[in-house]
Image (cartoon, rainbow, N blue to C red):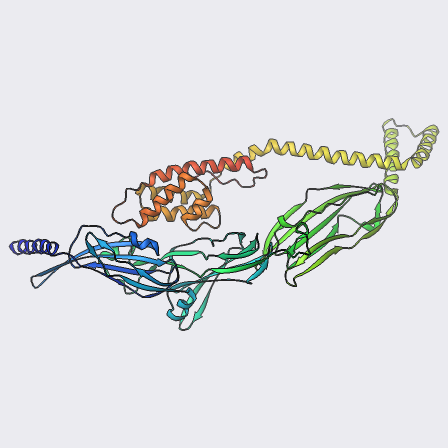
Length: 583
């Protein structure tokens, strides 16, 4: 006990002596050449104890601060005591070239200035074989306004990525759409085997000129090499023998050409391929007066969204037939790395006169982005022969005969001569007026279709609320479990768990949620944005944070409720309403 008190007294005395003599602050980096926006570690260490905080503000001008940690150590060797305070700061440069790390201050004590060289990420990947890096490229460097260009992102990693999040590419002056879920595979680079996560995006520029596409940013934790215990093993920065990384790829530039002067903007339709197709609901070669057939016209465009395909309107000036146009449909699919848009037009056609009938050719002008030439897709004209309504005539006669025969059987009396005479007379009259009967049947058929649709719509309006109510009570076990995990993380006020469980919960509901930035875009709420910024600050704040997760939980609870109500009102065809957040 006596020796222990002597050691403590010596240590306290040494601390006061060191403070009195003044501290020194030494700065160092784990490497002096890094890729743009890739991370490196800046270490600062004092030769004595201090309770003063380190001012990191000078770093924010040229670097992104990813994370910080702080630790203190004391030692007593052969009666000689020493103490140190160490900071480790994970940084990523904001621009290329030689970047200065300015002197940092603890009170009146300043560290030595340093510099690192920020180079393109691809050069780093080739020369250094890092644990994780990213590549991004365009399928072509020049494109026309409105045409599709593929943008591909590949993340290479040798070690397991812990809680990875990938932001969306940043682009102005163009539309962007994720093409499919992506793919995962392995490649060999030198003596190392890398896992590869690949994502493809469709970029459709809106304006001519130069467009710069900033690559997405990957943030994750990776296991540390030769990790040892100590205060860094349990700190916020190392997260238990792991270290945070932040990587991205170099920006790429797309040069967008304007619409050629020879083409009117109203006729501008850029695609790599465009075709016209047609089909009929029945036998066109045996088409009769009063018989309705449906003609389906389909436009398929590669490299073009269905919403950008112009609608076809067919004006009918021929009195020999009537045309009733349906609403049609649109669909987009990802086909071999390209958007393939499909627009379908349906036409119900009823001929009212026998003889030759000609449907004119349909032409769509489009611009071939592969050959840079204007082309015309054509659906050839079609000539058909409309036959008289014999089928309708025979059916009417048979119907009359059957009715009279049934009436005769009910009365147990054979048909009289006068009845037969009337039947012959009726047949003669019918043969003279078959055209008007056929026309009347056609009108009645159309009225029946219209009334049936209205009745069906009313039934749907009555049944839909019941259906939606039933569906709204369904619980998704996975979403309920994820929501409960998020709620539990908020109750424990664990910032790291709150972030991860929130992102995981929303990713179950909608693709493309990988970061807190994606969460902001999903909800579009200013108050929530401030709470998420506070969460982000709490993740990397030095020392204890006053951030409260319960406020964030209550806000998201309200927003989730509004999301469900808004979806129930706005969607006319609600096939699977997302359940309200689990209780």
